Amino acid sequence: MKKILAVLLSVLMASCVVISRRVEVKSVSTRAPVKVTSAVKAHLKDGSTVLYPYGIVVTATELIGRGTHYDVTLRKETYIESVPLDQVLGMESYRGRVNGAETFIVTSLATVAGAFATAALAVAIFGSCPTVYSADGVEEAELFSS
Image: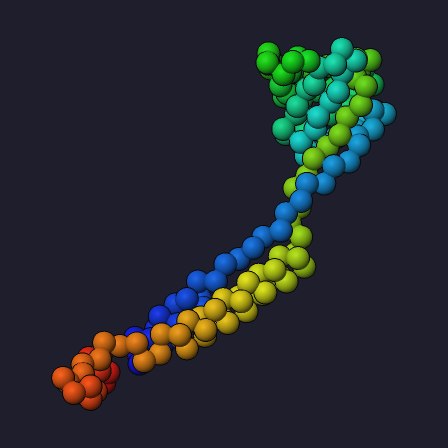
């Protein structure tokens, strides 16, 4: 019985944790001075894109930050430090967020479902210890019982 209890507790304690995440996208103003510390994507007039994973500073004349410039086909990339502001059509910032309430609710439901599944499994396997029967069909013993 102790072994079964240990298995049941192990299964219950190993229930999954579901973390709900989403990406928050906001437009970035081109009016100087602006400092953005999250990732930024700048769309340029020629159709190319510059990604700034560590953010940017917008001055009166340019965007400053470590970025990767991708051509229109997204095949050619070059590293850049600044882009003239008059070449920028628009920018957006990205920030990952964890939805705490949804994470709590889904994790709680998964834990409850795991508890019910464990209980159902315990009921299904109860009494399934190897049993020895005599030739006339009389139960002689259960091998793993105490």
